[in-house]
Amino acid sequence: MPFELDLPIHYASIDYARIVYYPQFVHFCHVTKEEMFPEVVGRTYADLLQEDGLGYPTVKSEAEFLAPVAYGERLTMTMAVERIGTSSVDFRYEGRRQSDGVLAFRVRNTEVCIDMEAWKPHPIPDSHRTAFEAIRLD
Image 1: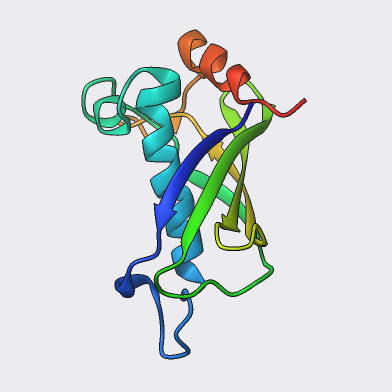
Image 2 (image 1 turned 90 degrees about the vertical axis):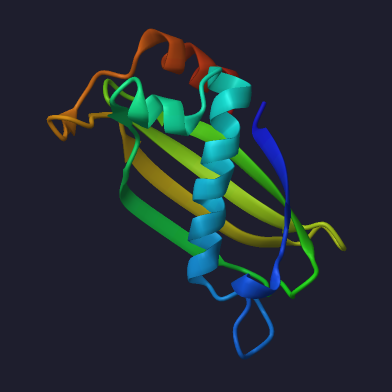
């Protein structure tokens, strides 16, 4: 089952057109990932980086911007796993406006588990793999 997050749209995320500035949607995906880690993996993303020496940077991103999102709106963000490899994982992020349920955007990221010291791919730890399987799409 996908991970879900309630995300308010703050003034800092909008542009002159009074809607979310499109790069912010990618930022919302990262926020969702950071919130997912303690709830699903059992470690904060900060602890993963600082204590475990592992990270999951994005190496490929594909985005679709489907509907505008205004200041004051709330998004229901979902994050799900589409594929898990040896050291990479494909996450699908979606944001729906809570006011009407409209799908506003979709992002697919390939993220690679890396050793932060060597900056080289690292096999996804078994505990992460198990946690990611819990949010995998059927």
